[in-house]
Amino acid sequence: MPTDHPTEKLLVVPCSGIGKVRGLISLEAVYRVTDTLMPEQAETLCLPLSLAGEEQERRFAREHPTIAVDGCDRLCAKRGTEQHSGQVAAVAVLPLVFDCVRKQGLEPGEDSADRLLEMVRVYHAIEPGDEASYRVAVAEAYQEFCQG
Image (cartoon, rainbow, N blue to C red; front, top):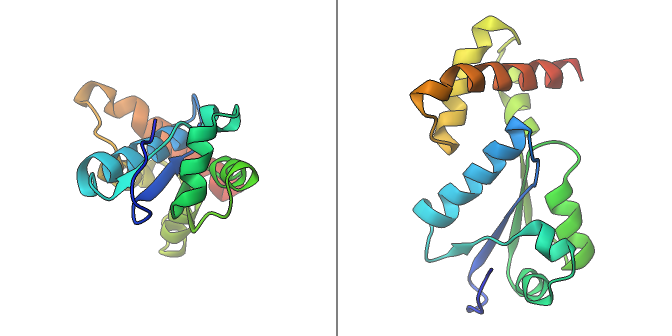
């Protein structure tokens, strides 16, 4: 749970895409920012707790610049934060990343899986034993995005 900090603290809110690789990537990207890249400048909150009415979570989001990191175009983190706490300053969405690589000419399919897996590694540590399942999941997510 966020604590009270000066207003220059940045709030980074992940989506709650439970069971979806894109939600997991979003969550891991947020943790990379809050725990590694900017631990003194950024915090996160529990989106479901905020949506359930926890006033301290909502107040923190109202009082700090907020970035929503959504895993899909449903924009649950953005919408939930805006509905209960106020305007979101920026939105990062995995489909935007997919759109970028598609514009660079990456076609969905077996050949794209390795490149996509490398992108995921930027935000999420993958154990060697989990690589195959992540590779399949991110390739399927990209395939779904491209058919979309």
